Image (cartoon, rainbow, N blue to C red; front, side, top):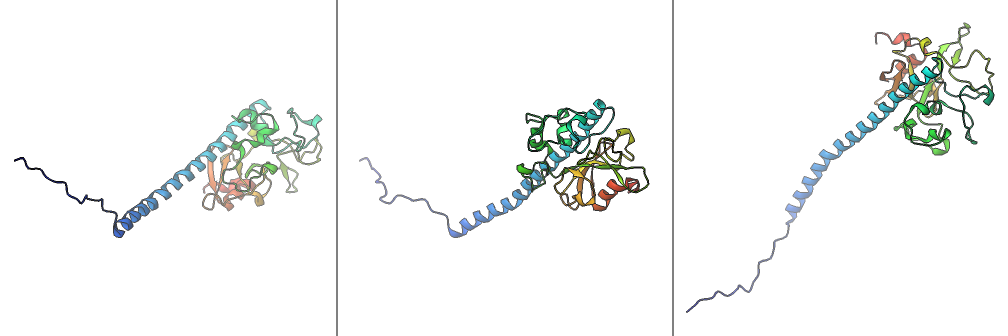
Length: 246
């Protein structure tokens, strides 16, 4: 006689997670997240800082190219003279007719925006750490050009402004471009650096040294990128000779 085995009337069912097992899995996931999330944040922060540093170096290179085509003169912060006095042709934006350094250097940069004044809107000019950027006030970019490169030589303590400001006439000897070769202490004097919002640095009040652990990022006239604290940044602006040996 052939024997057959009857199937058990009870089919086995899969056992679910116990509460302890579930809590163990959750704890493991939490530990992994605690390990990975800070690492991801550090990678993103490093990428943002690297992008900013790359932009600052590009500004220096662009200014070197600009000077080679403008009789050796460094770019100015802004040219508010009448159109007839400007040496660089500029197609004005009806809302803001004055060319600033970002537009003046744009032809030497790989900007993606089209149109002359629209170059302001390119991300390459905007400090990635500047949280107050507003497209309606695009001249506030958190990155500023040094607007006082040398004393005016009159002995009255006034600065020669690296721009043509407001209604000043072109004959005003206290404003205008500076020869790159005339910039003293290029290894300490900054060309472009962090600001609270302005596109220029005309005084210590414009310097921002809060974005990199109590320091600001600056590209110097020798092309190097440095991190200065507030005191160092002010010396770089006012008296870079005193930075020697630091």
